[in-house]
Image (cartoon, rainbow, N blue to C red; front, side, top):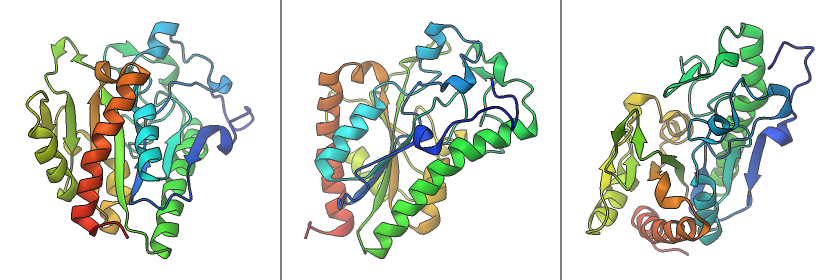
Length: 261
């Protein structure tokens, strides 16, 4: 567990990944909860192996789907290389669930009672570099006059606190619904899919921080895609969902920006 400034910390290269930074496609992808990894400096946060591998630590399947979309659409992809149990990059640092002490029914005792210095160290090592990387990519793309929509890819557990969730995919949006409405209409027309509109989460749950900060603040189209994680549990299903989403995202970008040059 982090003990203070004299404790060895993690390098930015270990904390943040930027893939295909020079991609010229019309999307910028973020995957806020990409991995379950805990750098050695944090130990195991007092959790057993099952808890560290469960959905409380990451969004299973979200990163492979993100990579599939990025490859197909030549999109940059940014993600933290550290579990959200250390710090959640999709929460403001002053939010009560930025560093959680209870996730669903699991106590993360090692996060309880962190002092200001320890919390700020996590912000400086993980949260701030992640958001700086997103800002830098958007700045570069806007300077190059590349049309840009920002898409966040997440996954959710089929059962939460004993309650089953019926949705296969959720499309989340806030003030800007341009891309969300397109995806909801397209996916919702498929008889075998149950599509949530701001379900199972919504911006009221404070899950829209990254998109609010980087897309809505700049007037860029944006959307969050939440996939039920049992539907993207294998490489085959991850690839299939990536292909499926690419079709709708490409048509949505054409609607927003016109036909590709």
